[in-house]
Every structure is written in structure tokens, then in C-alpha cells.
Amino acid sequence: MVNSPAGAARSTTPVAGTAKTARVSGGAGCLAAEAGARARPRSVTTWEGWRDFVGAPVPVPPAPGAEPRGPEERLVYHSRFVVVRTPAIDALAKNVRTLMILGRHQDVTARPGLIVTGPAAAGKTTALLQVGRACHLAHTARGGAGGGEDGGEGVPVAYVLVPPAATAKALAAEFARYLGVPITDRMTQAQITNAVCHVYGEAGVRLVMIDEIHRLNPRTTAGAETADLLKDLTERIGATFVYAGIDVAATPLFAGVRGAQLAGRACLVECGAFPARVGGAEPFGDLVAAMENALDLRAHRAGTLPRLVSYLHARTAGRIGSLARLVRQAAIGAILDGTERITRGGLDAVRIDHLAEEHHRPRNPTRARATPARATARRVP
Ligand SMILES: Nc1ncnc2c1ncn2[C@@H]1O[C@H](COP(=O)(O)OP(=O)(O)O)[C@@H](O)[C@H]1O
Ligand SMILES: [Mg+2]
Image 1 (cartoon, helix red, strand yellow):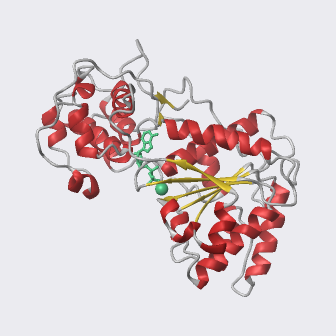
Image 2 (image 1 turned 90 degrees about the vertical axis):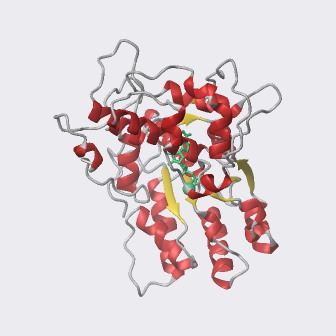
């Protein structure tokens, strides 16, 4: 049975105004933050972990005029950092909302779904989690009408990872694990699926998010069975399904009969690298400016990062994951060495992920821009 969904999201705190980022012990040393003084969070692939994620205070940048935060607190802040509201998150949020309404009364056949696709470290999982959180919070704000079997708030959202080399039974077991549905080795896939569908229905799950969908290859027998299971689940669980995976549009996931089952019901949300320019807009520059605005450094000069936008684009290939890593690591370095500002030298000293470093060609970056980009990318509220 569902592990007491009632009261699950009661601890949910609205993000705005929650200035505390994490609990850190007092003292000047940085080791507590370094060692991860917090207990290891529970995985979001279980209902308890998901509830923790939704209810946890979101890191917020320093508010103007607020009491300055100490180095330890700022180290923790930069290690977590803000989520920037990107066009992909906006598109996903809008589509999920629309499709959930569209599918609300579609009880017999599968509801239309979405597939978030893009390269690695492009922010697919982040987008999924943010949109799932927003859906959960909206559900809770409405009082969780139509919730769980115990009359509680129910479980509005489920988040499941496709296991490596997925078999249908293993994926069904992942669905079971999320809600603590008891299963045994002796149970057949059909039995697990039946139990899952029953419990998900009772719990009132409305949005199912399935990540790492690229692990599924319908050209293999196991992959084809898993694709069939997904089709079965979409028809039997009255929820909107959202999938995310690496460049799935170009994979066998969309090919053949099984591919058509999935692709025929889902539309794509592209979550790619940020281009330097699109028409008159500068998406990557906006992203850089939003990240700079979120820094909590004592001596950082505003406008430094937007002036380095060409360099940053070349180093990160426009990928949000690489940029976030570079900026956060440089910020942490600046706190640790006491300079409290990010400079070109500080960025040069940071080694980021292999993919981005490989891509980076150390030729002369194009001329620095005179004006900083507009920070239209917003932090996710
Ligand atoms: N919207 C965002 N705002 C800030 N940082 C982000 C955002 N999206 C992704 N990131 C950063 O990029 C990293 C990789 O993102 P992730 O969502 O795991 O990518 P993917 O699932 O596409 O591989 C995250 O750990 C985070 O640091
Ligand atoms: Mg991911």
C-alpha cells in the first residue's frame, strides 16, 4: 500500500522568502560544508524522497539589504545553487499543464504525453524535477482533491528511472518501489503490473515522469517488452506520462511498431545546448547573466561573466550543466581563497567535465561584448 501519502506535502514551504539554504554548523572552517554536513537525501525515486525534495527549502540568492551570509553557508549555497528558469522548463511546464487538462477525462485509452530530449547534462532531469515539483505543489495548494485511499492528499506525481538494461519486470519493479508496493521474486511481471496499477490508481497519481528513457531499446526483446509495458501502464494508470532521455528522437525508441506506440502519443520538448544567438536574442548570454545575478560573493564585479560570454560559450559548448559546474566551482574557489570574485583567471583554473573540455578549442575567443546580456532567464520560483 501507499506509504501514507497523507500529510506528505504539508511541510512544503513556498520558495519565496526562504532564505535558509541548509543547516550548517557554526565555526569558521569550511570542512563541515565540504564533508556534506547534511544527511544524505533520500532518492527522489521513492515517494518519501520525492516528498523531501518537494518540501525542501530551495536555495535563494542573497536578497538586497539582507544580513550577509557566512562563508560556510555560502559554500553550501554554491554547491547546490539556484535553478534558472530556462525556455525548456517553461515549455515543459506549459505543455504538461495543458496535457494534464486535455487528458483529464480520457480514462480508457492512453493520454497524450511528452518526451524531453537533448544531449547529456543539458538540464533534462532538472526540468522534469522542477515541473514535477510545481505540479505537486499546485495539487497540494488545491487541497489535494481526489487524493489517496486514506482520504489524505494522495500522490500526485511519480518519478521513475528506467533501470540499466531494462527488462519489463525490472521497470515494473521500479514503479512498485516508488510507492512501496510490496513485491516478491516469485511474482510475475503481470502480477507486479496489476499491483502497481491498482496502487497508483488508489493514490491518485496524475503525472508519471520516467527518466533515462534512452536506456530502452525496443529493437531488443527485453526492450520491446519494456516498451509494451509502458504502453500498458499509460493505458491503465490515469496519468499523464512524461519521458526524458538523451537524444531520443534519433534512437530506435522512435522506430518500428513499438516506437510508434510511444512516439505516436507523445510530443517532443527539446532541451538542447544554449545557442549564443537566435535572431536578436542571446539565450546563452541571458543564462550567464542569470547565473551571475545569483552569485553570493563579497567582491564580485557585476558584468564580469556577461563580458566573458564568448569564452564561456566556447568552454561549455553552451551546455547548462557545464556552465553551472564552471561557475559554481569558480565561486567556491573564490570563497576558499578569499578573493570573493570570479575572474577569467579563476575560470581558467577550473577543469570541468571531459565532454566540455574536449569540445573547448583554445583559439582566441571572439571579441568581448560591450554590454551585458539581459537577465531574462529567471530563477525558478
Ligand atoms: N535550469 C537550471 N538551472 C541551473 N542549473 C541547471 C539547470 N539545469 C541543469 N542545471 C545544472 O546542470 C546539471 C546537469 O543537469 P541535468 O538536469 O542532470 O541534465 P541531464 O538530465 O540533461 O543530463 C545539473 O546538475 C545542474 O547543476
Ligand atoms: Mg538526466
